[in-house]
Structures are given as C-alpha cells and as structure tokens.
Length: 316
Image (cartoon, rainbow, N blue to C red; front, top):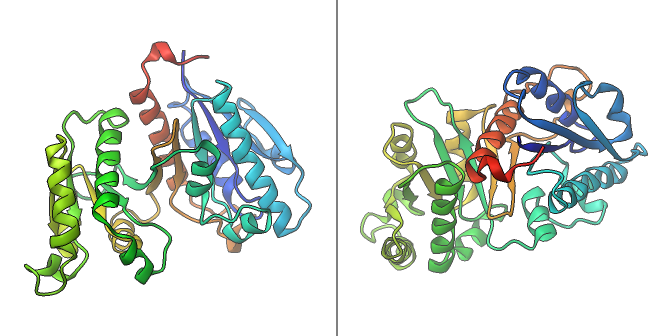
C-alpha cells in the first residue's frame, strides 16, 4: 500500500523529460515503495526507465503549439487519473507558457491550469526549500503571483492575506506534519512602513489580517521588513513566510535555494509539486541539465503525500 505518483514530462522542447527520468534514477532507493507513472509525448517512450510505467498522451508534431498541446494533455490526463483513483499525487515538469497559450490554455502557468481543472479555490503558490545551507528550511508563500507590480499591490487586501495565511497554516499541519506552525508576514513597504513613515498598507491591510488569523487560532506574526524576515526564517524562527508579491519572495528564495527549490500548489485535492526552473530550451538535448530541483520535487511529493494520507488510504 504505497503512493502512486504521476509525473508529467512538460514541454517536449525542453529539459522536462531529461530531469524527470534522471530524478527517479537518483532516487532509486527512496522509490522502492513508490509507484511512478510518466505522462508525455510518444517520443519520450524509449527513454523511460524500464521499471516505471509510461502513458503516451499524444505525438508531438514538432511545432510550439503541438508542444503545448502535448504538455497540456499530460496534465489533464494526470488530473483525470487522480480523480479515478489511479494516482495520489502529481509532479509536473516545466511547461512553456506561450506554447500552452497557443494550445488554448490562456493561463499564467500550471498552478492556474490545475486550479481550473479541479475547480479549487483558493489555491496558493508555495516555494519550499527543505534543505538549505542555513539551520532551517525556507518556505515562502506568494500572496500574489504572476502580476505586474502595480497590479499586485492593488490586489493585496485584508481578505486575500487572511485567505492565504489560513491556507498555508492548514497545509503546514496536514502535509508537513507541523503541529503548531509559526508563520511570518513580510511587509510591503521599506522597513514594513516604519509605523506609517513609508506607506500605510501594513496598518490598514496586513495588521487586521494578522489579527483575524490569530483570533482563528493561527500562529502568525508580523508584518516584518523584507530585509530581515527571510533570514529569521532560515535561522529557525518561522516555519514559513508569506510574501506580498512575487519578486520579493522569489529573490530571497532563490538566493537561499537556487537550483534546489520546489514549487508546491496549496489548496488542490491532491499534492502537486514541480521543480523551481523553466524549460531551458537552450540546453535541451545536451544531457547537461541539473536534475536537483526535480529530485527534490519528487522527494517532497512523497513526503507530503505520506503525511496527508494514512497508509490505509493508499492503494497499490
């Protein structure tokens, strides 16, 4: 009775298949009690490690649009497989957003695609580095994701922050197994506004959201300045940080965990992880891609799945 993980191979023009196959080779011992099924284009069949299952979702016609279609079909069939009880968890290799769009999916990325396919709301984008050079992991939830900066600031609201704080706290409990997670909120303005000297969002948006989350039983503190909060998380003060917009969170995260981070989608009816890198068309086919992030994505997917479900609820 072990987890069954679906790994989608992403855009066939990129390094997705290479890092996916390499990851299961690197994790061979850890996968002894895990079933793996790859989903991708027919062209990848000959490279699949022999001990694992492969489902061809179509044949790539060599065009960017065709690449997007194959990548999308793999994700769609993986979600269908979870619904049918064939898989517990999905790990997704990188896709190329313009190719996805040309194939009919006008979404910023796989997170939003999975949200649409499952009808999940809310969802959250959590960047996780379980192993860092510092004393502790770094987990960063992006309160707003792929938006221009002006738009991201306008999207921030008390309700949005509260929603994301609660979503994160629930995930840390159910999937990470942290009994009483401590969450920090990263401020928006310099020095987290310094008592209103440099903006008022911390006072009128952040603090009320923190107060309401605290009243709901969530252990959340802040807002703290961006120039210290991530360091404090790395030294063990917090289990996770909520960042107000994409780049303030990603700059800190990739500085601490470049090449080894994992993207985790919160709020789905299944665990979904992905490596924290793109398709890398420039090195595709050269066998030089670093599979570390995909290794960590598969490793974390196993851990989160086992934490979320009791062994009795998993099937062969």
